[in-house]
Length: 238
Image (cartoon, rainbow, N blue to C red):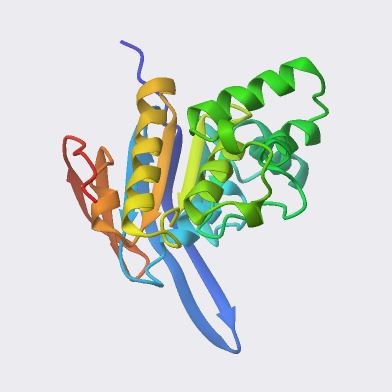
């Protein structure tokens, strides 16, 4: 039987920052694999390395040492253009701050990544309408961010992150600016993406309730993976 290639693999990855003459360890010799279709959560206190890990997967930062592989390909030789292409084709990112473009409607915000790829016409409109329906935002599609609630803005942000059908979705504290009810709805939505499209999701969160929706949870401390808890995904309780 052919061995499955991990979607994300870290092999002894460290990230060291120099700030004002001080050395800060963001990640400390992290080794981890995330398979296709896995919903993996990383949880721990602020400064433990969770967001650093996601930034390295997204190519928003580079490791000090170690090897990162995406879909079996080492990122060590990736150029800036390679990373731009990967973020447009392979990786979607959802942030705590929604980062929607204020002057654009929900439809226009979601279409933006496709327009950057040079796509136009009926196929773009159809894809945008499909993902807005998926995130239950069809009725608000012509509203601008200022006219939407926090939960609605995050739904639009998720639609924008998945409209290009990425293999990997990175979610960095996606419920951090939401109340418990809207936060639970967002996590349920992320869970549905795994079940419907077999997307690989890496979730960074402070919320143990949010992490319960994942297939397994890595606890982090001081830039290291401390323990792994594997469980059957539970229903997110508000």
